[in-house]
Image (cartoon, rainbow, N blue to C red; front, side):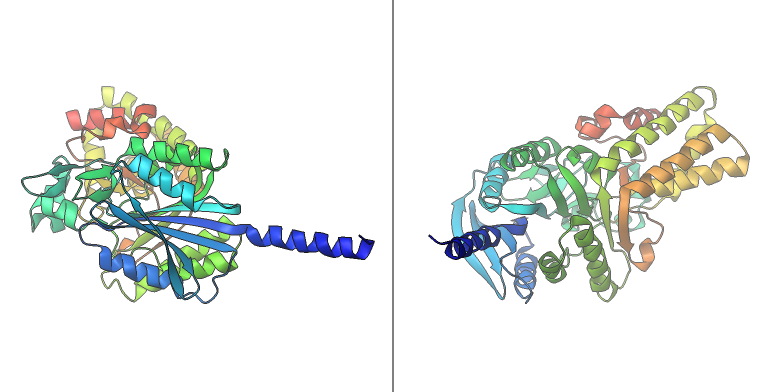
Length: 413
């Protein structure tokens, strides 16, 4: 073979190799059982109608269709191609891992996983067969929430929510330990590489607890602090961003912009939020929160008035939609700092709170909100009024931070 022909062959082989590698591989795991099928198909069509999609973007969807059957689709320009049909085991760790093996079989530069369905924040609800509702344990927060007063608590807890992946048919959900197991398995599938992005297209996902527990397996978390509308993420914009933007930071920035534009004209009450959290920075937030908690625990021992101060701050901080046991961590710190400065007490604690604000600002890459949510800053935390849900102490964050100790002290009084 002469030199010119050899060069041509090598160039052709190189082109084939490059063409076979995608820039992005994305798995969207959809659990629409109960009442979200219309939203699921709307999102699928929004993905497919992006005219910029090409072979450099590999978007795959596993959609729970009926009974224990799921369909697998590949999203291409203008169409979604039915790939295969699988029988679910109703074991989320197995089923999501199996979907990931299918979705990440090719070679890609970046990988993303989006959990799609109903969500309940960091708490793991239980299914009540009598009421046929998902429920968390009662707390005074539900009585304090104006929206919650008008309807029965179980109804509010479930019907307005998008554990996560709640399935009324199987009466199962993806709890926190299962989520960690899934992400561990995906890390193995990716040969030890982290996911570049985990999206929680569910309600109440943008919490410090979620970012902390997935940090060993992913770089960025994209999620909402409050309850989502059924439309969820803005998928047409997401598909086009995947086709034109190469880096995860560029992608997440565009997701925030598209989400804000989409909901500005659709959410008249202005209650929408979307955050991008650098999960690795969640460790620094936890460390600074621990410093604040330790100081507060020490103060409470000789100054019981601090319990009243913290109770007032909790009452004045934002309640997120119909599960009001979550609030914005930055706002909690801000209200506490203002109270301490107004009373000219505990300057050392004020300085630690200032450092906590900086840690949150460093961890939250960006957030977008409606006009009624301007007081939030992108990272939530579980903060009940009077009762700690029995599922919370089982979370990784509660087991490795002093936040639970502070909650136990506050709920005891």
